Every structure is written in C-alpha cells, then in structure tokens.
Amino acid sequence: MKIISLINQKGGVGKTTSAINIASKLSEKFKVLAVDLDQQANATGNCGIDEDQLEFTMYNLFTEKEVTAEQCIVKTSKGFDLICGSIELANVTTNLSNVPNRERIMKKKFKHLDELYDYIILDCGPSFDLSTMNALVISDLALIPMEAHKFSVKGIKNILDFLDIIKEEFNETLEHKFFITKYDGRINSFKEIDTMLRESLEDSILKTRIRLDTQIRTTQNDDKTIFEVKSSKSSQDYSDLVQEVFNVWYEQFN
Image 1: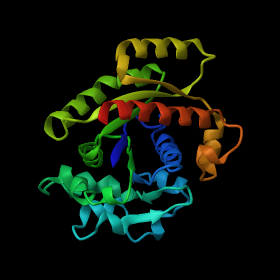
Image 2 (image 1 turned 135 degrees about the vertical axis):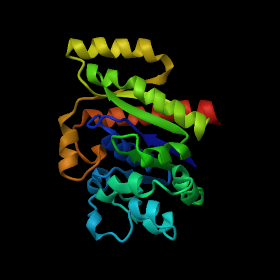
Image 3 (image 1 turned 90 degrees about the horizontal axis):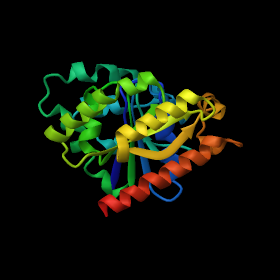
C-alpha cells in the first residue's frame, strides 16, 4: 500500500480537486481510499456525502480512542472509498494538545488498511496543523499543487521547511513533488513563472501541468469528478499526472 498526501498551506490551489481526481483515476485499476482531512470537507461534499448524516468522520478517528479507521469508511459512487471530513477538524490541534504521540494517531489507526487498499490519497487542509502532520508521518509521497503565480512562489520555502521537519522528526523516507495547476499558457506571466519554477525546483517539479479549465468548477458544483464530464481539458491532464507520478513511483520504490 502506498500513501500520498496533497498538501499546501495556501488555499484554492487545487488540493481537493486533485485528490478526488487522482483517487478516481487510480480506482480504475486499484483499490483506493480517499481521506478528507480538511475542516471545509469539500472532498466529502464533492462525493455527494452530507457530513451531518455520518456517525463517524476523521474528527472521531482523531479524538476517540475506540473508533477505528474501518468504522469511518464509507462507499462512494466514484469508484473509491472515503473517510469523511467535518468542520470539527478545526479543533483537532487544540483538543489533542496534551495527548502523547498525537502526531502518530493516524499511523496507529491506519496500520491495518494495507490489507484493504492499494493506495490511500490524503486531502489535507490549507494549514500545517496536527492533521497535516499526521498525514505526512504516514505518507510515502507529498504532492504539492501550486499555481504559476508570484504569491504561490513565496510559500515554497515554508513548505520545504515544514517537510524537512517531518523528515527529520518523523518520516525520513518521505518524498515530495510539486505540480502546477490552473495553468494558462496564453499568458506570458504564467509561462515566465513556470520556467522560473522549473529552473529552481529541478527534479522536484512534475512535467505535467493541470490547465485552467472551467469544467472543474462545473464538477465542483455538480459533485462530480473531472472524468464524469465531457469536453474537459483537465481530464487528460489528470490522467497524465497519475501516469507521471506512478512511473516515477515505481522507479524510486520498487
């Protein structure tokens, strides 16, 4: 089983969209579990699930010792299973501040899932809080979506510093890759920043770009993946992304 986290402390860069679409594409051939670690629970809503109707969410998994990961799993119509997020996740860091080994709660509770799934995709919230730390402690790969925009570039050092802490303290084998979302090749500034990022990040940035696509907003409004709508540029992009990531994956880890 391989575990991949989608992270970035900046919101609106495509973490949830990417997590859902990567999980959807992988589920064509593999058993996949998606995990919504965002207090906004957008991945949950994107799967057509009402968090208020659930007995258990990630918040219960974090805060209640007797709750197991298996109890939290729900089936979706997208081809993959899901552990849902909820607004209560905003309180996890505070509520667990005095709990020993709080950074390893997911590691303990997810240890039996390798018998059930080939891949787990973790959709992290837009902050480097306790839930994101837990996600990275168990991850093999951190995928970092970012826009080709000057404000996104400013956050790169913070991301890399945070990953260094995780690697040093909890998970020395963690790998990371950046990839560009919402790319518009018609705009010179996008192309210039894209070039600068590739020169700076070198092998840490993927070749695949997710193009700007109005169909993505449609999928969000209609609780669909990009593969459930017609005439989408980004459906090919996400297919290419999965192909690129997992080609790299096999070279590095198998």
